[in-house]
Image (cartoon, rainbow, N blue to C red; front, top):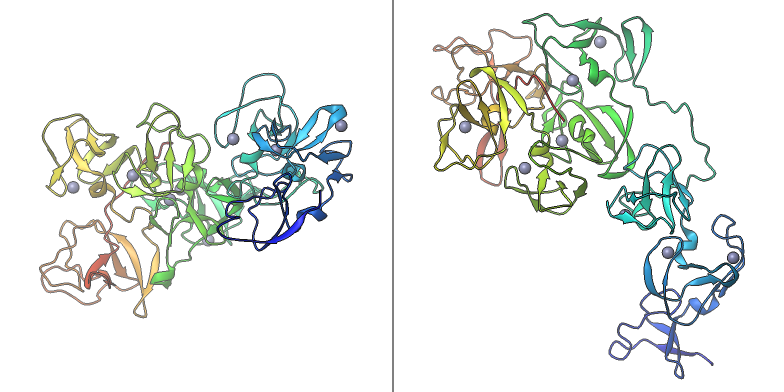
Length: 498
Ligand SMILES: [Zn+2]
Ligand SMILES: [Zn+2]
Ligand SMILES: [Zn+2]
Ligand SMILES: [Zn+2]
Ligand SMILES: [Zn+2]
Ligand SMILES: [Zn+2]
Ligand SMILES: [Zn+2]
Ligand SMILES: [Zn+2]
């Protein structure tokens, strides 16, 4: 029948969709009054017979049917009502859109490339993105190296795929992902440092802090610079140069970020997952920055606080079961209602604090009546929330009182402050210093503070001879009052378990 070109009427034509492309029509569109068929202005010029189907999609030409049918697409496995493209001799049926699915891609949840296939081999398959089952007789993406598959629609989501078709791009067999080259036995050159590093075991009592993870190195093997103070845990030196993560569809690159001695605001970065301020290494793509701990939390993640593995990362605000705060992104369980923010997911399960000579372990809340007391701040502690406990003394401590807010600012890191270079140091003197920017009575209780670099006798205070310590303040414009930044609590973390 002849089609009539009509002008869109908001009342009469609202919600009308094009029979071919499924899009809502607007402004000008075609209509057949006899069959009540609507087509958008451009679609009638698109041929119904597709002759140039890529061979890998189907070896014959396809024809789009103009009768609405219920069908399951051979390429994506999704059952829908619409106007599919078919090849009748082969009983092949496909969404018109699905003829354009990329053949070979990288998804951000898997280290190898995945390619589109019309059926998976025998067995049960679960999607690596949404974790739901895949019907193996329909199309999906699969890995040729290991047993891994993803629904077609999940693999091509914009938050999963970086949009690059890799079919004609040969795989770089020796892609440069090794972070260092071996110079001689026990000596390496790391791509983020200009000097050679030597493998040593730090002597007891000599604590240095890793430039990658910012945590102390006790008696662990580490790579120390032969010319300057740069040092890395042996494990941290092996961190991959490039990494894929669910929070970004593009590959993230390991960076030294930021360098010491910069202006205060440029002297650290905020991790986009746990929101902690950090001066260690960073995995970065454009504006996304992750500290190395959060970057490791990807794919399936088992956490001691929950019996089921956590998979899906949600970028919507959800209430964290650990800290009770509403946060994003969170890790979620798909079997029950359980969400964990990255701050809680990356809390060390074992920590040390100068308050207690025993290691403290992270307790995921107790069903106790009444309230506990935190031995550090001497305030109430709700036993239903997470806290640190010492099994020998039975003491209980707030998580934040043990770790502080600035766990990932490395002691030894420095900033420019009012034309001076100031350095983060341990506040380990038996007498607590008075902060030179506060009143004399205000004592720094926090085990890490700032001192002006290379100056010992700066601004003597008559009461306590700890004149080198200054507190750096930052104007909190919203509250209109001063808050102290870099009040660090001693982390002394000996272990990080994942
Ligand atoms: Zn499809
Ligand atoms: Zn065919
Ligand atoms: Zn899926
Ligand atoms: Zn480290
Ligand atoms: Zn060096
Ligand atoms: Zn983080
Ligand atoms: Zn939390
Ligand atoms: Zn406390």
